[in-house]
Length: 240
Image (cartoon, rainbow, N blue to C red):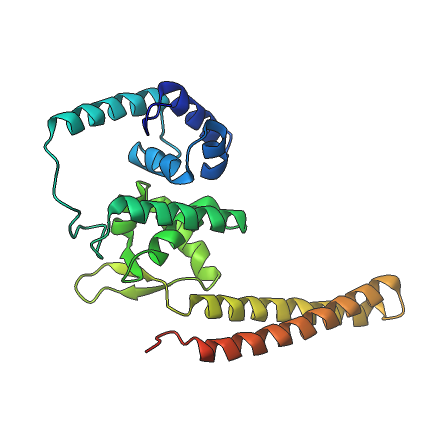
């Protein structure tokens, strides 16, 4: 395999994988490439909905020719998408790995991409326009993803003090907030099971099943909340 260059066949396999709704990791395994390579290739060429193998291959060939004729640039400096002065390729790798893990955990891909972008941004906040530029997707896709992530208590909105734009923010204690939101939702389910058990009668098979489910959930939730609160104090949102 010649270096890191993708062949036209590789790109056709990527396009086929995207049509089949495969994850970037699965596509990478199919053609023997790292997940980060697939992520960069797709994002650089219109995103998963607009990726075309032939157009991407022509763009890749132009990029290769430009690299050969352009003198080497100095070491990476501060950039718009790289506020920490890191190599953008490193940020892309972390983004891709984070997103893939979130998808495997059950988060829809677009929501995972937005959340990974916020996680890997030092400020922990981005506007819709910044997310559109960074992820190469439409504002509507960002809006849908943000709405979903808000319902899961994973991000929140705040007004940008320097403009009229809204910023989407991920807090340092997002894991704690998400666990607590999940615990509240599970508590409502447990209470609903308990009420249903009483209506059906605890001596019936269905009633006993619902009562047992309610008790199980309440005990697990109690243990989970106590543990989350303890470790939240050990690892505060803004450690010194």
